[in-house]
Image (cartoon, rainbow, N blue to C red; front, side, top):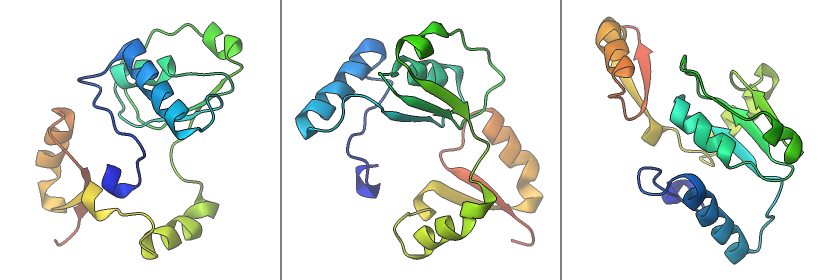
Length: 146
């Protein structure tokens, strides 16, 4: 991810819980950036990912839940009050922002190709099975007549 603009990458299989938050706080101090008001985007769509993201709340933080899971996550909602933080869900990009988002991709300021893979629409059952089994490593795009 560092090749795509990430200032810090951490593998949550190796760094978890309070150690994860400490690693991020260390990075923030080292770079001299704000220690509060973080923007946290949870995109994994897993209970563990959502729990981890919630645990990263800081004062004034905004947690955006993008990933979807049917699993239940146990949270202490009072953390939102204690950190004067916000949590919101978003299904995707607002339609009025599509032209700007598309321009970012076309101007090569955002790379999509490394994060998606195309599959023939006829393979829909196999692709869905792979998604349910968490075997996909990139976002699957089903293409008719591919």
